[in-house]
Length: 260
Image (cartoon, helix red, strand yellow):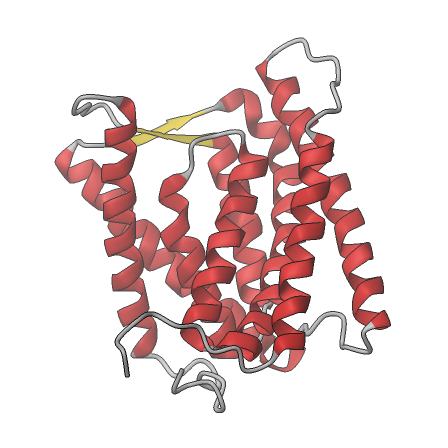
């Protein structure tokens, strides 16, 4: 009535579970940053970062699983019944987002991708890290955020933390990935299965480890170039969302939260 922004918590327990999962994960990531491993070159720096992230994320999954069992909750909602639709929808959304984003950069010459051949050997490890990240973001936290605070805010918060997780393990300035993570979270909620977004998160992590997005059109600073890529990425994700709404590949949004 007063017009102020407010958050209505529908399920405190679910919201708390999602918050705890991210606190556990980011706490472990922060603690692992103090571990100094010997590195000869840039490739070993990335390799050490990925190894720490993989070990820490796996440990975090174990802690979250034990926490969920202690709370008498279902630890992971895999949603295998809708796995095919989830994978197809996520791949379609990723394809549209990447197509619009890459084509715009190529036609305008504002940004492009530089191949990093020295990182090719890190692709399998980066893919595994993305899968582990996806399990926490999509198979656990996103579902509980949506149940606890509603569809719209739940998708936004879980996407934001999911992007921070991507940034923490990528060792790159990857602000332009946030719109894609937001789109993938929407896909997971729409199809009621985290399988597709989890797999695509692994593909994204692997892709950005061998292709470095750069902007040759510098307007004042390098950061402004990345902000431009982020803006176009947001438009591309919006276009991908519009395309996905035209396809009935999932069971729809959560019925009890669709009005949120």
